[in-house]
Image (cartoon, rainbow, N blue to C red; front, side, top):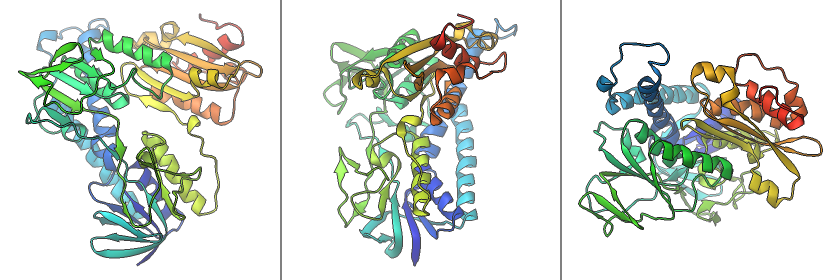
Length: 451
């Protein structure tokens, strides 16, 4: 059968590209060897954020109920039921994955279950069936490399975490990026003793160092022990008697959550696909080294965020239909669902210094925002990095309870190259947390009103 487009992998990159392709009239097939929705919907973004929200609510009840005038809650009787939290998360996953399947079918996309192999520039084989296509998109995502261990059930993969289980007291989380940090704080919020083991010198390597340092302080405030520059490739020589022997520390350990940096799932391919650091190399149009074969999402190594994967999918499909747009990854946000949440867009201070850009930093604290105070969510800040001569906004960093939503405003005004003067004169309703944009921009122009 001949298709206009075959997509391998149905995560946020693949299913968004497939739906768009169906909408614009391309005869499309999507191939998935596991579950529709990929890692993000099934065992990554959605279930992890759902249980994190459960932990946030649990923590707020313990900490804030009395201050908010809610009496009768005995903190000694309040407990966190991980299995009920995961049950709720899995119900959400079911609704979303069913919704994606419905949208694929609604837009005429053929769903094929199986493992695909690219057999030529225009053919894909799956289940002993050969399919022809004018174009092929690889959206196979990434995986967590395994940690070797002779100890049964010691190492838990994120994919298996949200099953029915009893969480132990002492948990080690291994990783450097947002997933590791989110889960380390999650365990701490529900009362576990947590150690975060980081293979590098710092956490959040894609984030501004100011945000990374703030997050380190936040984790320590939640009593998360952090060990830097330590790798866990195997537990066989470093684990005994429920203790992990790491660097200059011996850590109590009943479970290790593997959340290390992910590697690309590269499909079998007869035409050789050039790789770069283990990821499929692409050009500015997401095309691989083979003409007509594209790679989008995590598999190309440009980003590990679902929204960027989806944006690449839309970009490629639109381009196939002759619609050319810009794909500037610096104009897509970086989000982290911690307490408080962390969000960033644009360039970091290190990048501006390296480019020798004359910039200034204007900051405004959430503690001076009326809405944040009424909500009891006044921890955090906004920082705006702006170019000195014309005032163009070059980067925004937010730590706030709803930073992952607030960053959308920064995304909008950076898309149109707004200046701090534009943002400062934009009226924000009062009381809202979004007023921090106006205040930080006024600080850049002259002086913030409420600082």
